[in-house]
Image (cartoon, rainbow, N blue to C red):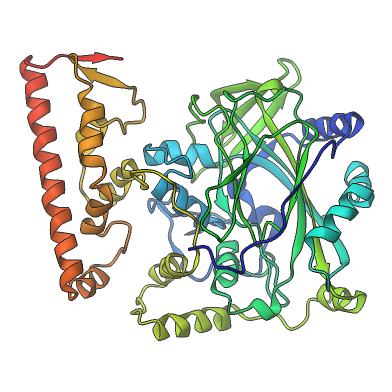
Length: 489
């Protein structure tokens, strides 16, 4: 479902970073401690509109109960995270590896750390932008009619074991709208919609690695990208010193889970999360609201990535006109145009601004589903059902979705695996039937039921879900009665 316009050339550059540059980047990373989580993006960009006016009241304890919302920069209301399009898709699908895990684990997996810098005067970065390797790659990546480069950003991205970079496109730039104006999820929707392609500004980015370790399959962490032809993801090993060049605002890309067999940090999306370096122990520790957690790592366990970017312009005059930042596109104009397009496609526009934002993401932003028999992360249902007042924790724990879930077997038969295999392929139907992932308002659900085919699918989901509950209850009773012995794998 990726639109045909979402593609660019992808190239691999050997020895993009030499040893001196990698050493300099290591030192820069240490000096940048503490590194904020990627949810703190607006602290750097300070956009004119931090939200699309979907703000909801914040709880007394300063947190946001809704699974898609986080506190705004002033901690006065709850808003959609800047890249909720990424988090929403990952939590719903389990990423391109189709991981089945609970909401809390998925959040920790997504909250990598880093520094986002829009001043490129740092010597090692300035030298990279001037290098022949970068210039040659930029000429291949930027459109032929847009060969005037505007270096504008570099990021230091750090992943600890168990973390991933979910499928996404990078921050999109338009003539009149960018991450300094409006939320980044809305910029992604604008790009996927194709409605503002005449204003789109292509870019070239290099993703390069400066870690000291040698890659092996057990580490994972491969760079992945998708083309609109429906082919599987292309994986690129994260070899130290190597770089990949791509227009990340036109190509869906990600990183495979780093050390996939290890648990990510257990962190709260509503708190200030950061990664701090200790000179005394020469280790990095995850902190929450200034308090250290139990998650500590040596530098040798970090996946360390440099991302640096330049925009592509047709002329120096066009570049100067962009830098003047005149003729900004109003947020209300963007939302009005998307709303008009949604109506023209037959969608009912929700009364709630939050529901409208979710609908915009659902309709326009098309990240690929995993190539899996069960392409949805059914474990995440637990969190959304709790929001609806349904506490089914025992059943989710039983099928391996608990926070501390471990593989389990019952007697000789792997009943847990059998249970998941037997009912897992119905989970998509169940999700549709409950309408948890499809809508937050019953009105939209009611409209869908007018279609007899949809109605049949919903009823099938309810029946199957009832069967799941009955089967789970029966097995639990057998376990409690001592007729079935549950043993750890």
